[in-house]
Image (cartoon, rainbow, N blue to C red; front, side, top):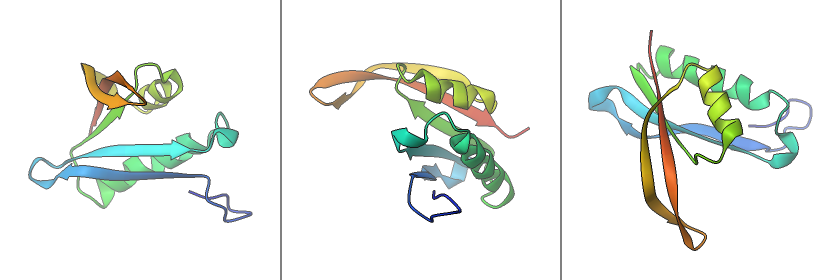
Length: 108
């Protein structure tokens, strides 16, 4: 992701951990803090969802998020994602075990 005016990288968004046999993939995104709360990730995730349905032929999209990242959870929920599950201490990061919220969006 980059700003149109400067073409400077400000973040990334994409699909990974795809399971083609189930028409499902996980979305991941990150943005530099200086660009948070400007609606840019909303624009990017809407375009990514449209791409998943129209070009990738997906039926569902998964997102895994740190439960403390309320901004990311609000972004997902604004775009129709619902919480499917919750993993307790399922990954180790920065010297401690962390939880994961699992969200999904199913094509209407």
